[in-house]
Image (cartoon, rainbow, N blue to C red; front, side, top):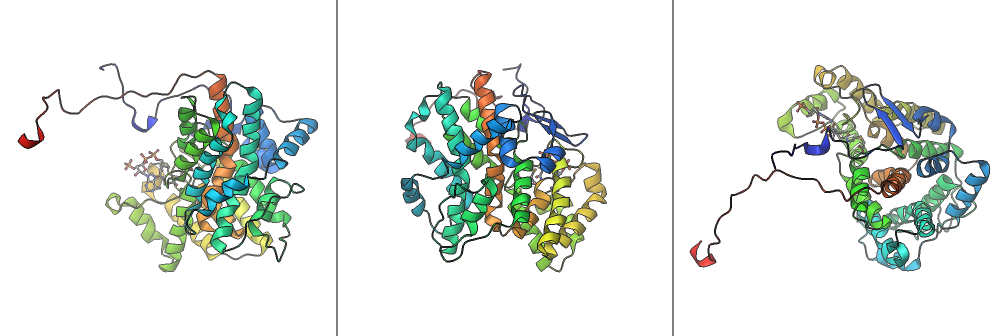
Length: 391
Ligand code: CMC
C-alpha cells in the first residue's frame, strides 16, 4: 500500500471532470455553465437556472414553458406518503423528515430501478423538483397543528411554495412579490457549488448505480450537518445567543479563536473560498433590501454586521483568510420571509436540488466508475484468535 497518499477531507483530490460549475476560491468567482452568479441572481429565475444546470443551456421560451408545465403538473404527492409522514413526531427535525420521504419516493416509483431509460430518468427528475417543496411544507404545517396545503398549479415555483407554507383553510395567503423575488434569488444562489460534501455524496452513492431518489436523499442527509448546510440554522441561533447575552460580539470572536472552546464562528470560513464568498456578497445586499422593503427591523441583522466587522478586522481571521460564507446572512432573509429557523437547511436543500440532479446526471453520462477510496491500514498486525474464556 506504499503508493497510497492520504488526503483527509479530500482537500486536494479531484474526483471528476465537470462542465457544470466553475469556482475560483482565490478570486471569489462562481459561474453556472459559464454564467456568473451575479448576473443569474439579478436576471434569471430559479426554474430557469435549474434548467440551465440540468440540461446545460438556458432554455428557449418554448423549452422553458414545457419544463415549467411539467413541474407544475407533478407537484401532488401520493397520499400514502402522507401516511408515512403522519407517523413522525411533531417535533421531528424537518431535514430528517425530508431525507426519509425522498428516500421513500424510490419505493413509490419502482420503475426507478431502470437507470438506463432516459424517459423514466426525466420523469424522476421532474418528480423530485416538483414534489420537494410540497413535502418540505408538511413539516411546518404539522409543527403549527395546521392541515397541510395542496399545491396550486396556477402559481409559479416560489409562490406555490410560499402559498403551501402560509395559506390556511380560513385565510388564503396572498403572495408578496418582494418575498417571492427574495426566495427566488436565494434558491438561485444555492443551486450548485461543484464537488461540496453533499454533492460528492450524491455522486458517490449514485456511482454504485443506486437510484436517483436514494442518491438525492443521501445528499440531503450530508447537507444537514452543521459544517455544511446546517450552518444556516446555527448562524441564527448563534446571533440570537449573542443578542440575548448582551450583544458583545468580541466575546464570541475571542471564543472562536480559542481552540479549546470547541466553538466556531458559524457562517465563517470555507474550504475553497479564501476571499469573499460571492454568494455572501449578494445575500448581504439582499438582506438589507428585503428588510427595508418589508419594513422589518431585525436586531439580529445589526449583530451580524458587528460580528462580521469584528472578525474581518481580527488577525486570526485575516491570517486564515476566513470570510463570511453563503450561510452568514441567508438566515436573516429567511426569517424576514417568515420561514422558521429549523426549516433553513430545508430551504438550502430545495435550492441545491437542481445541482445534485445535474451532477448525478453528469456522473451517469460520464460512465464514472464506482467511487471507492483506499486507506492505509494502521491497526494490529495479524494475530491468533483467543477463546473468550482465556481473554
Ligand atoms: N471559526 C473559527 N475558526 C475557524 C473557522 C470558524 N468558522 N473556520 C475555520 N477556522 C480555522 C480552523 O480552526 C483552522 O485553524 P488552524 O489553521 O489554526 O488549525 C483554519 O481556520 C482552517 O480551517 P479548517 O477547519 O482546516 O478548514 P476546512 O476547509 O476543513 O473547513 C469549514 C471549512 C467551512 C468546515 C470551516 O470553515 C467551518 O467549520 N466553518 C463554520 C461552519 C460553516 O459556516 N459552514 C458553512 C460552509 S459554506 C456553505 C456550505 O458548505 O454548506
